[in-house]
Structure formats: C-alpha cells, structure tokens
Image (cartoon, rainbow over all chains, first blue to last red; front, side, top):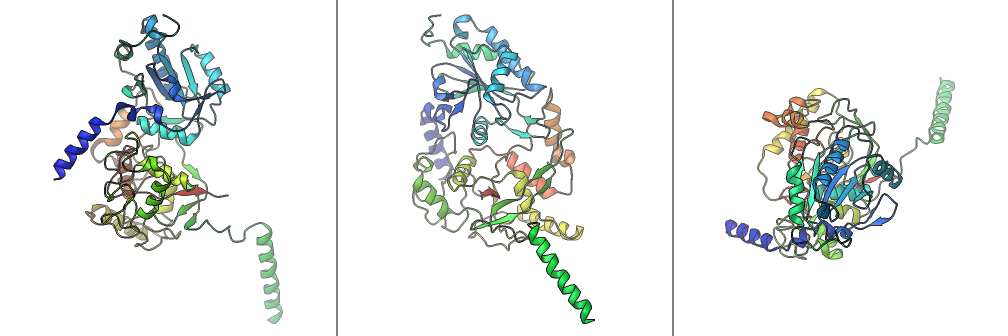
Length: 190
Length: 263
C-alpha cells in the first residue's frame, strides 16, 4: 500500500508542470543596481546564469563572477546577447543598489546583460533555500557560503548547477547554448 | 539595634528607587504565548577560521510549538499553502500528508498536537503571517540550553536528550506535555525536531579557495572532531540533522515555533 502511494506520488510529481518549479512564481520583488524595482519573471524567455554573492567577499566571489564572465565570453555572440547574468546579494544591508552598481563597474559587467539584485533579507533566504544555497555570517562582515553557479532555463526552472571553483566552464556554456537551440532570435536581431 | 534596622530599611528604599531610575525594573511583559529569552554568546558548532561567537540579543520565543489547529487557520487564510495548491518548490509531496484533506485535520493530526509534515518555507510563511519569524539556530540553541549550575546537571540533561533522540517516536502528544525549562519554554526537547531560520548554515562552506577539505573534515566518520566543544553531542545531533534537510522537506517529527525581536 505504502509502495503504491509512493508510486502514485512520484507519478503526480512527474505530471506537475515544469512551470510549477519556476523561480518566477516565487513571491517578492527585487531592486536592481539602478535602484529600480525588478521582477525575476522579467527574465522569462532567456536562459539565466544566476549567482548568490556579496560585494565585500574578497576571496571566492570575485573568482566565481570572473568564471561567469568567462562563460559569457565562451558563448557565440548570438547566444550571449540572448542570455542574462544575474548576481543576487546575500548581504543586502551592505550591498545597496549604489554599491552593486559600483561593483558592476569595477568588474566590468555589461549591464545590458548583467543585473545585480538586492532584496529583503528574508526574501534572499527563501531564494537561497529554493536553490539549496547555504550561507551564514561569520563576523567582520564576511560569510561562509556555498560556491555555486545556477543555470535557469527560459522559464526560470533551475536545470543545472556547478559547484566549487575547480569545475570546468565549457559544460556550463554548452548548457546555456542548448537552452537557446529553438529560441526565437533576440529583439536586437542578432 | 533598631537604629541600624532603620538605616537598612532606608538604604533598601533608596536602592529600590535607584534601580527603578536606571531602568532595572521588571522587563516589559512578553506577547501572549511567548517568553523572553536572555541573549548571550553562541559559539558556532563548526567555526570557520577566526570566527567569533555570535552575540545574540534577548528575544521572545513561543512557549509551545505551532499546532495543527494553528496551521489549519493559516491555510484557511492562505490558499497557496493548502496541500493541493502548494508550489512543489516550497514543499515536497509529504507536506501535510497526515491531514485528512486540504482543510480537514482528521484522526492522524490532533488539533493540539504539534504541526509537522511542514516544510521550512511553510514554517517561515506561518511565522511571518503571525507577525513573527523563525528563531535563528543560535537563538534556538540558547533557548534550549539554559545555563546549569554544575557539570553533573549538564551531563544529566545531555543524557536525557540523547535518550530521546535514540527512541523511536510514535504518535505525537499534545503540545505542552513536557515541563517548562528555566525560561518557561516547553517541548524544546523530547517531542519533535524544529525548523530554525538558518537550519542549513552550520555546514555552509568556508569562504576559501577550496571548501572540499573542510566538508570532508566535518562529515567524515561521526564528524564531531572539528567541533568547538565535543561535550555538546546532543547539539551535534541536532545540527547534523538540520544540515541534512532541504527546505522543501516535510517530515513526520519536524515542526516549528516562532520568535520575535524585543520592541
């Protein structure tokens, strides 16, 4: 009986529409590096590389951001222009929109493709928990945290992630390109 | 003799006036159903290099875990948290699976038993709906381990908690079935496990170039070796359990209670 129930539950899970697993259904809204309100759902239609980070992180985060930039550079131009790169701060009290903008400039992030987001701490925690991203403050403004690049499909469903700093980047770029195979061309026409 | 008694009485009055003047009178009464828990220093179980103890401010904590009846009120108000409607991102298939229906508790979920089969997301949402929040791990651990007078008392408490962890658990009793601890809070031990706000933070990777060694060191073979204080074995059990959870998990013996900042 229990086995049958389990099978039934698994079948129901398999039937659940992918949209149910989209991050774009999560409540809450964000603020971007320009201080403007930002809805995650506005990313719909593009594959997304998403990283949780904080601006004053001086060892790991800059390396991960640089790695995402390397992936960005690996993509064909047509794919690159249709992909979005999103950094969400886990330290929203410190990483104000102004500081996020300064961070973007310091790291030469192309702001037509990159978005840096600030949100209420409890909303950041919910997003992190959806993503399985762990973090805690360790004093002196630093955090202990997961090192992870998330790949979202065009509907906002997490379809892949890459952990640590020693993983190859090519598979991430290939994953993004695969998500664009049957996508319409970007509005820019590239 | 009587003169010196008079002096003492006057001193006592002045002392009382002085104490009131510096605000040392009785603290503001906690909200209904909550107790004030003093703050203190909490040492993370697995500190990273150079990590200092967290200073926890005094806070209010629910005296009891949230019950099935309270959970039912919540899902009546918030249809998105009903069993049939909840997002699979926010609760797994076991969510409220012991209830008879979306809005019906049934025989397996007595109204006054702790609400279990509840994901972290649902617990977090419940507390926010009530104008509260989940306690942090540091807050929960401080509330659950009031200072004891001596090592023997501490060891005895530890032994009882570990015995509880070792017992297979059947039907859950109503909330409040265990005696209040020194802070007037019940059921922190001996009934259920409880969600905390940062349940998975203890094993968050260190902010270092490679976290692999650290993870191995933490988890390998019983793993309390990297711990700050290996006498806190029951704490280790709780942290290991919490760290094994995903926020969408809904489990038979996992419930929650809420906290609130002091005004």
